[in-house]
Image (tube, rainbow over all chains, first blue to last red):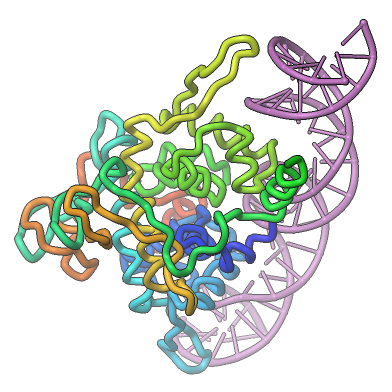
Length: 170
Length: 170
DNA sequence: ATTGACAGTTCCAAAATAGAACTTATGGTC
DNA sequence: GACCATAAGTTCTATTTTGGAACTGTCAAT
């Protein structure tokens, strides 16, 4: 499929996936949250090809997740820093890290531990309901169509064609 | 890079990305949480090619995120359902959806609304500290090396080579 | 004048993906 | 019994994306 089409989908997951839904983008964002800011530092710590790094940084800037800030004139050089929109990705990054901590660590244990400066303790992230504060699980959530919904949210022409085909049979 | 190498990285984000860090896997998981279970239903609702769908389902099964359950004999047919490990991905999916709701919706508004059955209200997911219950932000978290850490976590040989090169300069 | 840092760009080969047709097994219909 | 439909894949080729390495341009330091 043309992946740019994802941005247009009436689905918040699909639209977010259009921005961060590839391996390198997520790894680049990890580095951003670990205070990496410069082209060669990203390249060295990730081993990504320079070509792809340039491409992904450009995309993250285009989507407003990163901003290019000049840190020296002559020659003009920039660093990439997270915008507020980018900082808001933190729960996504943390929930990914947490799932890995629970389900993917080897016998050696967790590579990183997280301390909450506010309370001083090592913590895990927990996702709760904004209204009642209880931890969330898929089982206790019901989905309703919202104002931005479109038909039954088929992602593609092929899905629509299938629907059409079924309709013709009737 | 060889993407299988990601599973071996001493980084919980990288290891999770090895499982779900591509566009199709995340979209397939969205469908799983919306109760889609069968091959042709995934294919119709996503428009993914059958080839890739077979490949991604196989991978998700291999990683223990989905399980194949027979739902009829002769011919033997299976559905794909989320394991507990798969259900645990819910916070990742929800945080992705939530970021899209905040930053990627158009004028029409959100495609979907979420109701918390436990309290009966429409909600947003909030990520909080397991210890003090306060909402988390990157600014208030400090990262420590854990028992599973390896050197400075270079992702690749090229990163190691760069380090070696720097060392030789000294 | 030569070397090195930095932020890319260019080029080609290798790998992954899209799109469509084909396969296998079975059950129902004319 | 021939024909169609359903379901879950597999196979094929053309196109796109990615990996890997070298190259470019600008400036500073030696």
